[in-house]
Length: 140
Image (cartoon, rainbow, N blue to C red; front, side):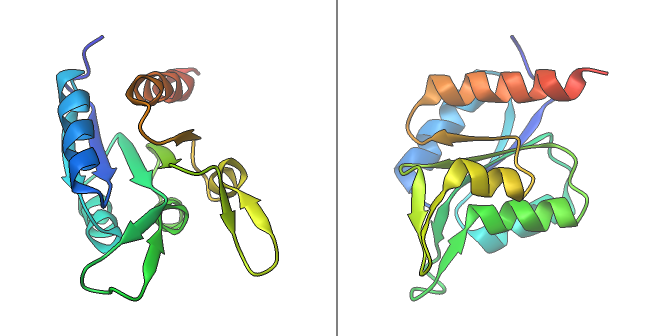
């Protein structure tokens, strides 16, 4: 299926994975804008309407080496600002620890308005999840 009209923002701090995902998603027909940091991703999504946002969960930023930024917060900020497109979170882990307890990332992303959460590095699942989320949003 071709997606020439679908724009996708990819927020991933791992350069090798960002490159691989960009190539795969571009080959699948998406117009991909790939960025490495939370701040760049947020600014990109504020300045342009994307059909799909795919974000890593823990986003490192060389400008802030002692801080982690989270894809769940990016999701929350985008929904708060009226982003109506598909948002998919991804991580190599399915849980994140906190001071109080461990949180299931699928639940955390859902609470922040994401359409889906997937494990990282499974490109076929990512493509299928994007397709399913787009189809769900297209239904009346």
